[in-house]
Amino acid sequence: MGNWIINHGLTSFILVVWMGINIFLFVWFYLFYDLGDDYYYTRHLLGSALAWARAPAAVLNFNCMLILLPVCRNLLSLLRGSFMCCGRTMRKQLDKNISFHKLVAYMIALMTAVHLIAHLLNVEWYNNSRRGGYDNLSMALSNLEDTENTTYLNPIRKTDVDAQQTPTYFVFTTIAGLTGIIITLALILIITSSMEVIRRSYFEVFWYTHHLFVIFFIGLVFHGAGFIVRKQRTTIPPYNYTLCKDRIEEWGQIPQCPLPQFEGGPAQTWWWVIGPMILYLCERLLRFIRNMQTVQYRKIVMHPSKVLELQLVRDGFKMDVGQYIFLNCPAISPLEWHPFTMTSAPEEDFFSVHIRSAGDWTDRLIDIMQHLPEGAQGPKMGVDGPFGTASEDVFDYEVSMLVGAGIGITPFASILKSIWYKFKTSNPKLRTRKIYFYWLCRETHAFEWFADLLQVLEREMEERGMGDFLTYKLYLTGWDQSHATHACVHFDEETDVVTGLKQKTHYGRPVWDKEFEEVRKENPSSVVGTFLCGPAVLGKVLEKKCAKFSDVDPRKTRFYFNKENF
Image 1: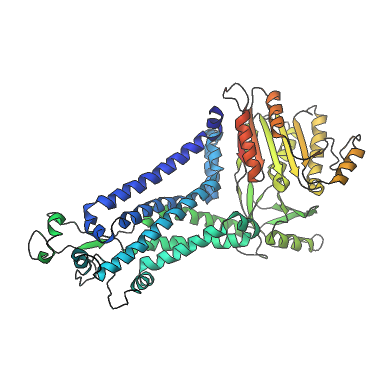
Image 2: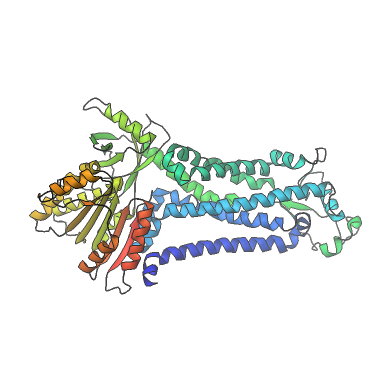
């Protein structure tokens, strides 16, 4: 339990608070509409479906206020810098922004379904009441005359349409109905295209459909202006519905029972979402300004395994280790922006990214770069960022475990380069005294573009008598018998046959229990930061190991898990 609190306590507390607010809003508004005197006559027409429609609407307002905040990346980077004095646990929460974004989206989807079903029932019951399908009171309430069309209760005003077609006619001819259809369709497309299988295989589909959120929010703001749900106007003295509900024929004829009058609104959704919408608009404006800045190519390198390295320069660009940027290439698509972790160090006078072939956009970019004349500048490139990630905190730990899978090595390339520069300048601010580095790859070619950096680091550490500062292990997870035979034949050689490094390549996957136990024994009283840039499945494994091998005693070894999220 102590280990769990160390790694998940604050996250769980935030989720409990969020869920508590959702439950409170749902219960509060359900009781408000189910028990409120102003909605007595409305409940008579609609029954419990009134409360079941309005309570989810309140929860929707709250979550639509939250949904944009986790993707305001400049805001998150600003907050991350502000929390530098507040401890790593608080900053870790900002690194889970996409997970929270998804969680809020699931709540929006659930509440939309409940809200939609309840209102479909409401429209049907409004129609039946208008047609005299229920009791005399429902008929009287639906037939209240209203010359100015402002004090009615039943929003279905036309009776010259076929009874079977009235609900459909009503939905497609009212503000609430039309906007409801539009935002529901937009939400369905956004959610379905966000499924992992579609997002991984057809990123462009995910990217473009996700921008339907603009239509969703516009429709959301106007949705409440339809005033479908109406309450009784407050009068002095208060309307006595207990007396008047059974004296329909005397409405307007005796002082105790004047003709009941009703009103809708006000529309409240915009109160909730206007702030986040302005913040997000500022985010997009800042992206536009950055996109207008000139980006020059310092160097274009094509590495093995179809990995493209771009070294770029932009005036005023400043970065930190492990940060990422968004790239836009108008020659491919003027609207698509893709995230890439920077592999350069802050000490260098350029910033670089390594791009692996992983889809249509990256394939087209690599193809363009491969066909450039030698020494030519590449196509116009827009850059947005940099943005903060968990890897920024790597130098805040005495000991760090860096785990990369495939191209997931990129943030750690930046870290290891920065370490090399810090050693060259004998930087006294370097707190880290030990780094364990694990790189998992499926094929041998993937090691090639990064091996030269590791060779430089090996040599630098040895020259400074700090060979124990960096312990790295490379794992080849995809191999056949020929690889194994070749490795056995050259086993006695000083350098590895795959990478050319002194550290030999391991075949298979790490035994994480063994690795964590080794780190714990070598660092009996240290705080160890475990950083992953790789698949979620591996993240779950490492997260469990961090909890398993952490000690509640602050004087002993504790592991903190950090994962890159884009």
